[in-house]
Image (tube, rainbow, N blue to C red):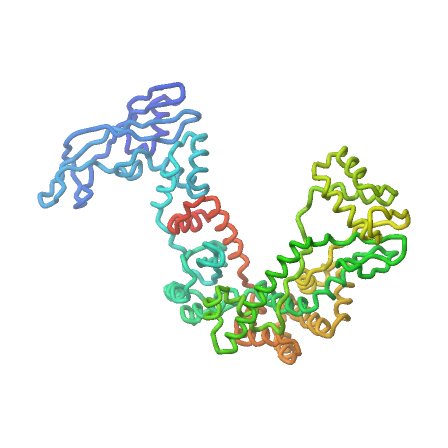
Length: 562
């Protein structure tokens, strides 16, 4: 068996510099260990001279790591020494034990290191809660202070980096994150997304040979000025996003045709317009449930809002015709520059698309039962409300009455008194297709499309010549990006430049301006995917800090805990 003194001494921090004296169980959950420092000599912290002239002794009390389920307090007897250098301003000093404790510290180094790791991983409040359970108690401010004391890491010289922005406050303030793509870890965090600041950072790292970025002009400028030796690579996902933004105005210009392309009718029904925006059949067998109608009050509000948007739209176009820049128009009208750009480039006033998707309502679980009972001949709203209430419905009766009104509209019943038995109602199998959804269905890989999606896209190509031209162009570009075919890029650019669609000509022109980076994105395997992952992690850390996300603290939690 190992003697108790030897066993306890082996558990002390840096036991070679300490001598075990005694251990006491102060309480059932608390140990007090007495030890003495046994260094042969001490070094003056000012002049660095070593001395053995002892002045006196005193006791320091330190918190240490727990043993099993018992907290540990270390009472360490240390010495003070005379400095033998007469020119040194410090005459007396306390011996330093850097492997055991920091000067003036009330905890051992190994306990502080574990608390720092807790602070990096969890922040202040969460660290304090967990540390209390692990017998490593400290306040939330102590954890944050320990994290702030950590020096920033010195990364290995990077060669392949990815750059992207992250939002302090979306739409107003942004920062920049830089990720080493070979090691897939963040290496720098900037508090802004200024081109000059980023270029200065890049100039300090001459080993960089590849810079992956999105197609923002600011990052292109920074990479050109700060790392002219590096190859710039445009991220493929962002290029496909640019394609979606190009295709969206074409689909929005033909939004009614896009919505009509959705197969919402049962197989035995032939649809026609019911005047409420949803089709139903002309025979007496099955009719589709129409969409909810908007109240007159909401219609009046929508008309007022449209008039206000139209006035701003016309002002923006008028100022642009006078030679104003997009930024100046945005400052004058209080608009984002992207909104101004959309207005001045539009061929007509961009109408807002109707909302198709909605949150599940309290009546939704009861709709199948209501449809079944209605088709069985029960046409009384009060009776239907009582039946579903007995099944657990907790909503208002007027909600059921509104739904019954939609059922009457589907059968063409103008009043409550007319309740013919002929005709049944069915809920549409699909929601009407929106332009944005249609865009991503076109860009989707053909081998992953559903059969119904393929048929719908084929139908859209036949609806209008613009759609018939835009869809093949978008599919061809998405295909060359996925197959990494740089030879097809030049041919596609020629086709887009010759297109009758203004949005595709503008897209081709922007690709020409960034041609080198776009071609490199097609040819090389690098992308900003790891950067997006790092940004997601940064957002999670920032949101859990509850207002304590100062840049210095956030920077250390992102870079040191990665």
